[in-house]
Image (cartoon, rainbow, N blue to C red; front, side):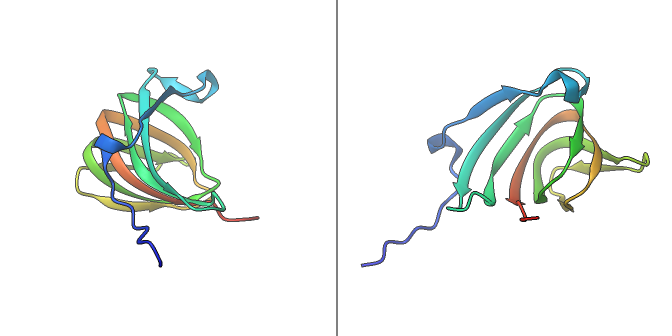
Length: 120
C-alpha cells in the first residue's frame, strides 16, 4: 500500500534551526536567522521551507535557483552592479543561480523558499 507523503508547512511541528551568518558575509548588523526546513528530497538538491531574518545586511552569491514568497516584512536585494529591488509581504520572485550582491532586511522578514541546487 502506498502512503501519501505530501508535506504541509507546519511551523509548530517543524524544528527551528537558528543561526548567525559568518562575519565575512556581514555588511551591517548581525541578524539572527531561523529556518524551518519542511522538505528535502533524497538527492538533497531540492528543498523547501520557511526562513526568517532580523534586520541586517550581508553578501550573497547564489549557486542555486530559489523561488521566494515574502510572508511578512521588507527586504532589499541589490546586485553586484548596484541595481536594487525591494520585496515586501505578498510578493513572489526568483533569484537565479549566479546572482551576486547583497540581501538587506529592513523590516524583519519571513519567506517561503523553494530551492533547487543544479548540478554543474
